[in-house]
Length: 142
Image (tube, rainbow, N blue to C red; front, side, top):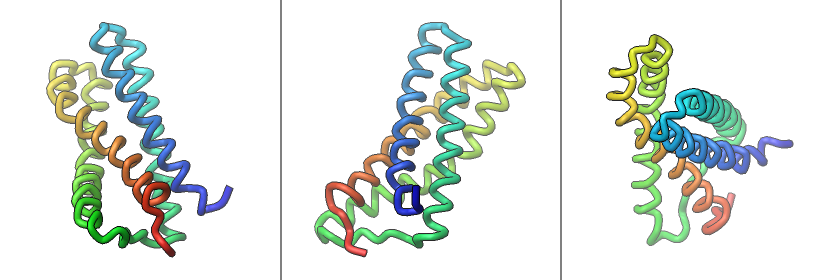
């Protein structure tokens, strides 16, 4: 595997995180606490591995610029901005949500998870969308 393969790996890890988050949500709504715990820890691991691969890729490849089609660029940049800002915000939120569960402070865990889960899901799904925009639907010339 080369550095050039990492965008595909990153999209797969983001997609996996989204699936794990959705399954974790369903599990907790069904009162399957152990399943929920396993799925959410798996989502954290998937997202962490994504972050490592993302940093490695951009260290070697630099930034990727969306230029064409020009009419889509403002929408892409708006999507990228919300994705990037929330990706930064979500890291401490995930950590605090996990810490509250670890400490068995489930009331505060639930209160924070109500915000953490949808934001994390948004970041995971928009990460996959950004990948498709850049590498499949509107591939950008190097």
